[in-house]
Length: 390
Ligand code: GAF
Image (spheres, rainbow, N blue to C red):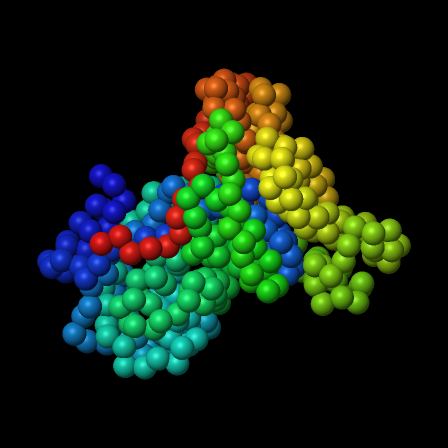
């Protein structure tokens, strides 16, 4: 059954009546620009053709109930209790439910809306979880779009993305940036979203993969990661330390030419974290310019350089990601890199349509030879952002 059908079926099972409507939002792949978003920098993701669906119906009371394919147990809470639970007592809510309930809380906090109608929500998704494809932003985006419509909040897409980020940061406790939510809200078929994470200005840039005979391969290593624990927060802290030492509001305010001075002023680890972010911002700008001037075949070297920087300077890769990237490159990919926050998840490779099967086979063989669990390899296509489906 499709995820849309599952969400509808789950809603019928929960309530016995038809939902008011069906909304969805996609996961994303980040083409380039990693760990630059919370440094006020540049990113270039695209929304993918894997989506999360929310079937929603109004209730006659002031309660909100969520159910999903992630967990057999529904979670229910009074809308006026959301403020008591988030953020301090969030641990009392099942982890998956913090995403949709956190969005409801963030939307009401942002708008000051009161007296909104109670709702039932049923959620199903075909975005792989833990693969670095932003399954969480897809839940947030679909929930935000649904609640905005039904509660008549009239928010624009940037405000909906911001509510998703608030949910992620405060209701879930993952100190992430805004990239994933913006990609999920603003995505467009065949296009990438070139986003300035300081101004939140977004340019929709044609990717032209199909016209160039290219496919974007996702190589999900199966190594699970979570951004609410450990390494992600440490990297973020190192970036803030680096900006402070350099006396700038954010690493976005440094240029590649500032790196020699940074190297003199800070310890080696902090410097390498800073060097990744500063050079990655430049690679995003270069990738967008190159794509526009020369087409997608010309961005391969930038993808490769991005991976090396994440592996050696930011140190967020794992052996499985490195093997996927190196093997895809050796088997003929135009460029390859890990995507997302790192410490597991997926790598991407830009591949000629005719090489998809051979690159896939090469990576599968390399994983088997290394004794790694079999990777999950599939193509994704740039797709539309959050929308109402029915
Ligand atoms: C995760 C986060 F959610 C994003 O905000 C971003 O920082 C990314 O890791 C790294 O580029 O997906």
